Length: 616
Image (cartoon, rainbow, N blue to C red; front, side):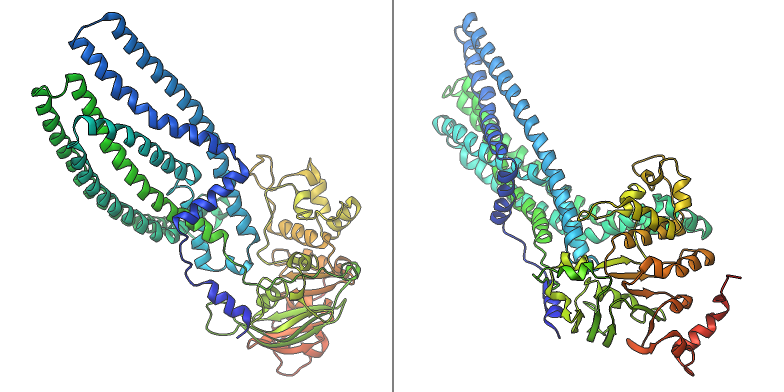
């Protein structure tokens, strides 16, 4: 087994979750890098949250004692006004700080969503076909939003924890001075409350780990239900009931998990509420007896009741926020695990020689290439040996599942070979930087995708390394049969595809979309052209026009062409017939068509009636 395969399987082992310390260091180093003033406003927030409770704890004591005692109006008015002004100042400052933090939190939410998208686009293609990686992507997304609240969620925990420490210091000082017996009562009930919270958090984490696969299925099912592109198939095959049934089944399984979590939280919630009520009864009795014995004033009684509640809430909040911080760190660690997902492909370091890109074509060689997909038990390709000379056009044919598309995926470096090597002009393709190697390829896959952008932007997709050539663009549109369609559009090449962002966008037919994809690939002007079923959505006449102009479209470039319609083979120099996981036959169209009992000969004979030259 090659090193690549071993790396792939090792990468799929379950990654350990980063510690809370690592999560904090990871995210707050990014915060410091992107928006350092976030920390300034966080410190202000801690100060505000910790100081605010003392206004309503201390001032009522002096107001009540003054009302019961000397009843000096100016002093009472002074206490009340001071309390009101301080509250107003604190709340105003709190509002300003929170609004500023909310704006930055929103920015970070968008930032991390963009980073997930970038990772999804840049990670090795192999990961995109790995269910465990897809689940990890879902965990990263939901872990940063629904379950943790992202940076905002972490910051709330830290602000609450630090402000609780400051508040606790103040109220404990007051309680120790007036009624120290309250401290152990609060400590015991808070400890029990912390145990209850830990049970609730464990239930939440279990649910989080069970939901990603269901969430992915939910998105797929309900996206298809609401996507108009599936409208015809759903109606013609009466698939509404089936799709709704799948949706209901998914909802049912999801609700079972949510209900189990809710039931657990509810049961522990009842216990926690009863515990809090019992604690307050005990504290009221203890402080009430002290007030009756005149050991404390009525004002002190109200202050201590408030202090006891604040002590309980702050201590409970402190422990709760520690648990929340750990829980949210578990959720947010899924983002780190996704972002730190290692590449499994070999990424070379060399630049492409300039002559590779300026030449019309390059030589491709498959030397003893075998390949087995990750998690598969058997090879898909076995000992492929093939040389495609520079400028040659090769047609790859075979029954479904013969390995044709896998052959193309290996050439495109979407996967690394398990054994053997692929060479370009005699040099292993893995020696070149991946991005450099991509410059060699113009590809149209059977399941190509167009984007909700203008036709021009779709044709120029990713073409940032060379200036736009309007004349060449128009020439290719004409050769691919797009010219008349584009001329009929009011905005021409500036017309948007689809209606996602433009209500006047057009919905191209399957054939039109395929022509755009072919023109896009050819406009890239790379020395290797790969066409995987490029005319599957075209009618026979349009298909023939494409074939007839094949030499003009591809020219002297090295071309690999996959098609189930064997008429395309007439336009290629050689044909490779895939069967039994390897190349079973190789030769020209005339050689293989004349081979008695040959695979290609039988396939061509079965389809020959469709290959009559339509020209008079």
